[in-house]
Image (cartoon, rainbow, N blue to C red):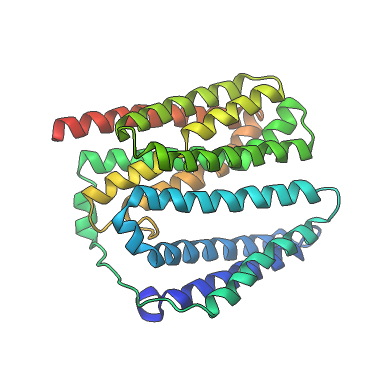
Length: 324
C-alpha cells in the first residue's frame, strides 16, 4: 500500500480500523460470543501493523540521520500514550464500565483520522527491500543472528511485563486493581523517563557501556520483582527495570542500521520480524504457564529473558571486536 497509495492513505486506514475495532470491542462484552471479541482484536492487530509501518516510513528521513535518537523519541511518544491510557483506566475503573472506557479510547484514533486527512505528506521515498535470498544471506552472519535473538528477548521482556504486571500484583501481593494499575503506570513512567535520560546519556557515554549497564540494571530489577513480597519492593524493581530497558532497543537498532543498510524498523521483515514474534509469544505462553505453575511464573520468564539479553549484549560486543 505504501508505494501505491502513500503514507497518508495508510495512516488514515489504520486509524479507522483502530477506532472501529475499539468500538466493536466496547459493544461485545460477555455474554456475547468470544468470536466477536477475537474479531475485534484481529482488527486491532491489523491497525497496529499498518500504523507502525506508515509512521516509520513518514519519519524515515530523520531515522536515517540518527537511528538511536529517532527510536528514543518514538519510544518517548509511545510511552506517553501507554502512561496516559493506563492512568485513564485506573482513574475510571470504578466510575465507568468497560464499554465506556473503550469508547473513550476509541476517540484517539478517531481524532487522528481527521488530523491525517487534513495533513499533507511529502512523497514517500520507498527504499528497496531485500529479496528472500539476500535476507537469508544476512541470517548466516553471526552478528545478524545475535542481534535478532537480542531483539526477540528484549521485546518479549518489555511487553510481557506490561501485559502481566497488574495480574501479578493482584494475585501475588494482594494489591487492589486500582493500585496494580497505578504501579503499571509507574512502569510506563519509568520507561518514559529512562528514554528521555538516554537522549542525554548516549551523547556522553560510550554506547557499549550503556548497553551492558542497561542490561544489568534490568536483570537486577526483574530479580527484585520476582522475590518481593510487598508493593514497595515491586516499585523499586519496576524503577530498576525502567532504568535498564529503554536504551537497549535503540542502540541495537543503530547497530543494525550500520550493518544492514536496507533495515527499516517499521517494516515487518528480516530481523525486526523476529523481534515482533518475541514480543507476541510470551504473553500467550505465560497464560498457560501461570495456569500450570502459578502466577509467580509470569515474572520468571522476563528474568530469564533479561539474563539472555545480558549474555547476548556481551556476545555482540565480543563478535564486533573479533570481526573488527
